Length: 452
Image 1 (cartoon, rainbow, N blue to C red):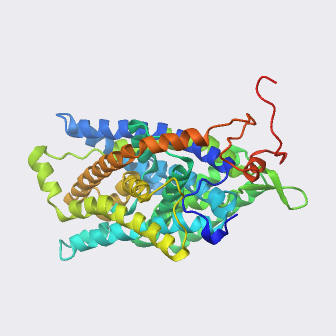
Image 2: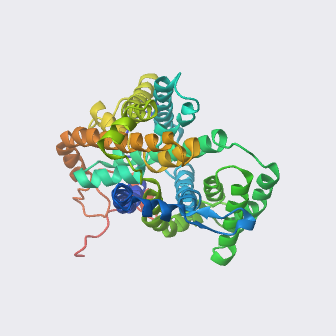
Image 3: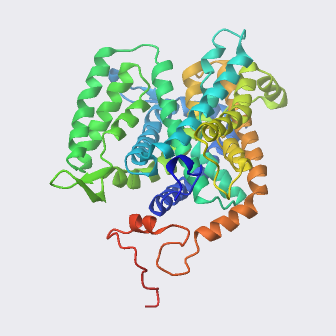
């Protein structure tokens, strides 16, 4: 058996983890399709003769003014609904690093390095294109650094690829780490006025929420008010309220402990919460946010040309297409170079490039950062949105070309991974150790076939 230092990059991991990730991606694929529909409706409506009605709807203000929560529907979608999205992302991230394959440092190194590279290089390209530009243009440096996993999976569904489990795992973990880094960037670099008092108040309901979930309390009438209160105090503190979603998620236990304090075979509340809330995030929160955020009036071909000629839009497009491809592929190559680990024998660098281009599909978080960077009333805001839409489309088309060229090989790998000659319920591509992980009783003996 090879040592850990010589283990291949992008290996398939354990069977139980591969099954879990496949289930997650199926849910996100449906959400991605709804996201595309919401964005398309917004774009068509905003550029139709009834575009003013779209803006009126987006700008309707609701909520108690006494609590400074009389927000527009667009802001409620960005601050409120995306908190649900980041709560699920936080649960997934904690699950990966506590109980998933990424609890092993050698497996965690690659997606972390790829996510860092996939954020740093796009940001650098954006800055290079906007040095000496208009005042305030550099505030959007983080816009091309985000990856939209739901949008990327919708593209995969449309082009009908058979990605092997190793690439699916890499794509999901890369996007999850990317989301965490994005929320850190938002909290640190896009907080203009910080109220220490409200930030301190945020810790009170957060601590009570954490105490209850550690005791496996699942009563929504207790947890939901505490979560809302945490969100309200975070909003009032000046830090973007979506940060509350990640903090709440990090308090939820991933692994259940028995009475003696040791780990039990059963999952913690994180898996149950994720199972219940992910459909709400993927099916409602993100599509509604896309509907309220993607509707930019381009003003015909002349307006589109003016937007695409703006340095902000150019920097975003370069970051999403070139920056992501260079950053993710380059970081993966550096990990391979310095650890002397080779790619799995069935995969090649074109596969890494294809996934890197998929990483350039930045939509949900990119739109959120755009609003924080430029505000909803500026021309830079509209130009940035056009850059996001065009850059995302270009990255999706290029990824489609690369991955479709490799699809015959993916199909063979997919079929091999799902072949179960001994009919024991575990595909033969995984070894007995993975069989044991996948079975509650730890038994690795062949299971009886379906016909007895």
